[in-house]
Amino acid sequence: MPVKLTIFLIFFCLIFMFFVYRLILKGKILIKYALPWLGFPIVMLVAALIPNFLQKVANLIGIEVASNFVFLLEFIILLFICFILTSIVSHQKMEIVSLVQELSILKKRVGDLENEKIKESNK
Image 1 (cartoon, rainbow, N blue to C red):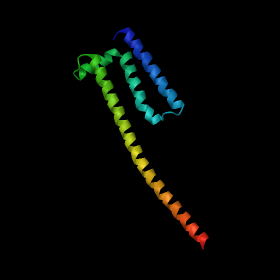
Image 2: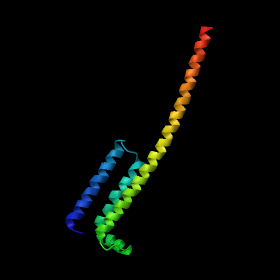
Image 3: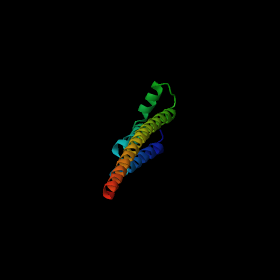
């Protein structure tokens, strides 16, 4: 891997990790949601710092060019992140439905109590 590319990857990964870290500190993203995003630069750092390792793993699974393996690896990571985000969205959707139902029940109870109080005060 060319030296310029290695330096660029290291610089990009460090900036990206710093950006995610700042979002965590500011409370804009929860740690459990940031972990997959921290996995991306860690994999890229390993690839940049140990290029022979990347080539050996690529050859091991039958990929001749290490850059093709990097693209495959990043595609798999992004698929994993998309799956995690889909899972989170699904869970939040179920939570929203539950909260809307609970809110509707509480509004009905409040309305019933107000009607009952009005009837008692009219007597």
